[in-house]
Image 1 (cartoon, rainbow, N blue to C red):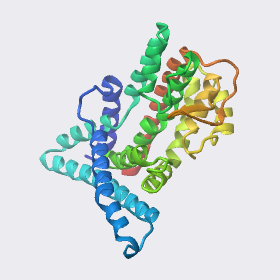
Image 2 (cartoon, one colour):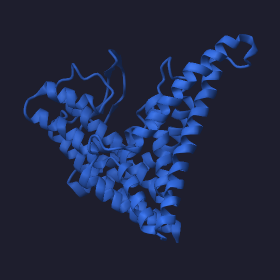
Image 3 (spheres, rainbow, N blue to C red):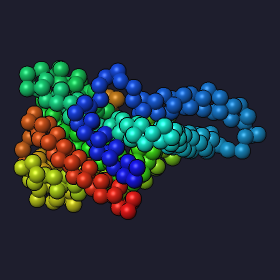
Image 4 (cartoon, helix red, strand yellow):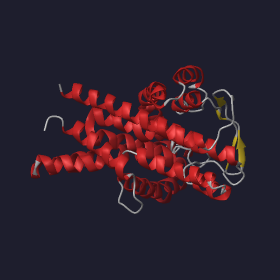
Amino acid sequence: MKYRHVIAMVAGFALDTALGDPHGWPHPVRLIGKQIDFEEGLIRKYLLPEAHEAGEAWPLSQDQTEQLAGAALAADVVLLIPGATFLLLKACEKLHPLVALGAETVLCYQLLATRSLCDESMKVHEALEKGDLEGARHAVSMIVGRDTDELDEEGVAKAAVETVAENASDGVIAPLLFMGLGGAPAAMAYKAVNTLDSMVGYKNDKYINLGRVSAKLDDALNVVPARVAGGLMCAAANLVNLDGNGAWRIFKRDRYKHSSPNSAHTEAACAGALGVQLGGPNKYFGKMVEKPTIGDETRPVETADIERANKLMYATAALGLGLACIVGVLRKS
């Protein structure tokens, strides 16, 4: 089937927008997470202690050993996950092309987060609408990494808007682009790297060496998707009656105001489209972390901005699907 990847991607996108991510359903990203946990456990239980006990007989320093182990972990996950996906689809293809199409459709569906991102952020919106600040803090704590116990209503709304904007790139647009390039196996490779970064790519004492390769890989894979996602979000702003000119202006001005080279592109576009200021200092694990602001503080972030951000995200996703389809068709032509 010549355009199986494209058909599966479109069908998977439709399933994602219709069903989201029902709790309790098996999910490939959870399996990737379990694999990473298992392999990290082996590294910390056997390799690192043995290297330390070997002393001068071991040719590498502790930092170098951790970096090498992290590189091996990343290589294993990134090769095994898409490889297994490719073999699964090949096996399905031998049964019948429609079986392969069905399997790839399910995989594409599970690799997209459009509906679940909207559903989880709208739980924050609903709690704020009811005046339930504690409930809103709890709901937003499920989708952000910052401390939420002391956030006021604006802080909670801002956190929800930021996570919708940022995840529009790595949860929606990037997977779609990789599906267009190489179907579910390519998107699985991207998700494997993305999951690695989210689990071991921290710049703290525990992971600064073990997660270095994973973090660099994630940065590399997101260079193009993050910028494409930001541009698509700027274009999408006009489709949902937001400020398209403001989106382009802030996107061009503030898209590099983040410690990560890729994280602020969609956040800048969203801030400009809404006419609000995002970013700024926040507490993480009890410690205040200073971050640059993104956008102009023309008005406070309000509860309704969560819904606006989701409409913008959906419009961006639709444009991203169209672009990914073009990529997929051209690749097969």
